[in-house]
Length: 141
Image (tube, rainbow, N blue to C red):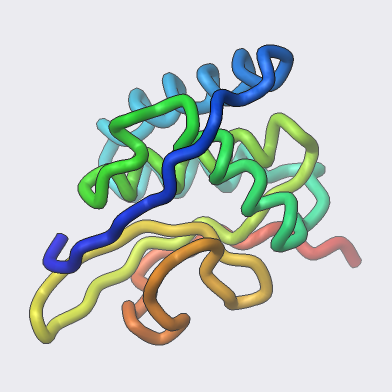
């Protein structure tokens, strides 16, 4: 990453919420080793029957993830952080839009979650990165 991000540090997560956050972080670490196409396939499968997440739900999931994982707190941890946030949302029955994108000047890549096109708890504006891959919630007819 070519930018500096200072993510907040927080008090400990309540004990009853830690297992699901730790599970999401562990699963995200494994998922992050897959090629982008496979990650997209897995996430499209997981989003089934999930309601669209609200900004508050996605923000709470992201906060839980960065509270339990030092790796997810670092700027280089954006892929694992975004995956863990999406997975934790799914464990709670909702799904945000998971996105990866690039910027050309200067070149950098980033992964994040968004709700209604707005990145959740990201320091950059919505159009800072050009999305390359996105897995939005399924819209029910």
